[in-house]
Length: 85
Image: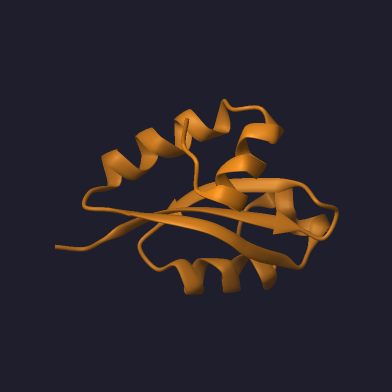
């Protein structure tokens, strides 16, 4: 079974981007090569700040959607302390 990752990267302007992938290092490399998310292209490079591993795409995407609805302060708390509350 293929593992899925939820990840958060920080762009050079300090903005945070949340996504999912099956290969986290490839995906961060794609972002930094300008072939990832269009919203990050003018904000490169990005740095991997946080990740979680899941057994299915649907689990990872459900978590991604939840985190994308969080306020920035809550995302930073998750990154710094691993606190998901």
